[in-house]
Picture (tube, rainbow, N blue to C red):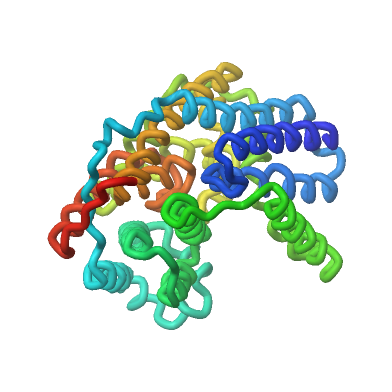
Length: 395
């Protein structure tokens, strides 16, 4: 297993090095997907591995890690093979800066949508938000998901209106805290990173990036020394994506021939509020119910099997579907990035972040690019009605 960890990590390092050289910046947008994958694959998983010697099938894990590597590679290849011609987005560009009133109104609206949770759980929302979130899987989905999305919309507009951050960011972080969901923090981080790279022109050289990575590694080592691994060991459970993958691979279940992908895409789009008989087990939740039924039935957050859906649908050939899917995502990403760079577009910003892995809706499963684009388009209309026109002649 140690060899597998080292070889795959080296592949990621080499890929990121060449990406950074091409971008002329070692602090670039591909940090977003890597900030999800690297901790799971090369921090949390090795920690769990060393605490559970002998419980790994090397062949299974080679397939799992290979899938992660080629998935990222397909995303990058799709991005760089796509057209980089920004002239199609107009040489002379006009854009509107969001008004503070619109930004603040959406921020307040996110709290109003979350009001049912406040009314039912009171101060516990502030003192134990994670516990509240774990108790609200059924019946509160619309309050959580819609409130999170409106908050993220407000933050996106806030970034578009600024060339430097203000203390208002603290209110967004607090709002993310009371939701008890890590995904909200990650969405805010992803939006901030994209804004930092393309709107402020922030760059890191290889030397400064190496210092940054050294600091992160030192922090991890300090955590290890300070509490005998307790903190890191607690977080190592987040590598259960891989162990759930292995559970499916090492079982004798029949493949679903596309059913899981189809249900993840379609059924997840319909809120339970509008579909009273919406099945609890659909898409990747079927795998959760099959392999971890007791944890799934608790209703406190279902174990994640989303990484193994392609394998469960198509077997070993699922990796081909994964590569094709992420190549297409890379092509679409290039379009949305260009849209953001050229037009400073809310559609470009939110679309790019979503394609890079930030679950802006917090739905867990599903592909919601169309819904996000429609919402961002509606926001762009609101922007035009709330601010004076600004014109960029030369970018």
